[in-house]
Every structure is written in structure tokens, then in C-alpha cells.
Length: 115
Image 1: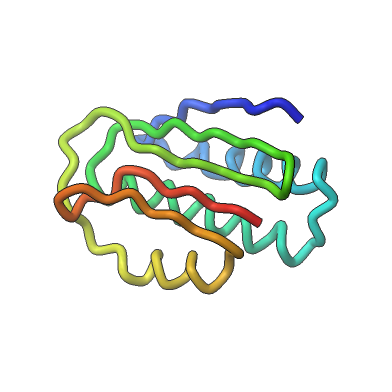
Image 2 (image 1 turned 30 degrees about the horizontal axis):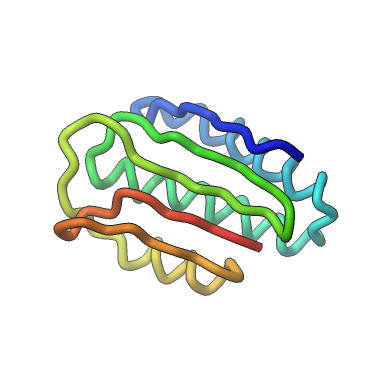
């Protein structure tokens, strides 16, 4: 599978359902089991909600495959500020195999997930 990007406006939460479908389709292409795919979709959604809570206007979401499935969710635009993300971060760390959080000045700028 080639890498592909999706630009996502954080002001309209209606697109989260579409993003979850894309994440599920990518997992299916890589033969992820159903439980791992469900957990991955939750983590992608939580990553978007983290960036929205930090004040970003949009997110660039990149999916890639190879050795597992990788999703990078990166905030863009807006007036970023530190957010209350403890619950979302705990959920992500409990559900996904690997997670990398890029933070600057208390503001989460990028979340990378891998199953």
C-alpha cells in the first residue's frame, strides 16, 4: 500500500466517522485482526480529538503500511495551547502497540500510532 494523506477540518466533527472508516479499511488491507482494527480506530479518533482540544484548526492524517499499519495525526493552523489530554493519552497507550507523541511547550502537535 502506498502512503496517503487526508486533510481533516477539526471544526466539523461529522468527518470523524469517515476517518474511522478509512482507518478500518487500512487495517483490513493489512489483515489486522478485528480487535486490533477496532482499537486502532479508537486511537485515531482520540488523536484527532487531542489536536482539536489543543486548538488546532485542522489535522493532516497520514496512513502507511509495510511492517504493520502506521497512522500519523499532525495538527495544523489555529491557535494551539496546552489541553487536558490525560484520559485520551491513557486510552491510546492502553490500546495501541506503539505510540509516539510529539509535544512542544505542553502542546501535543503530532501523534503516531502503529499496530
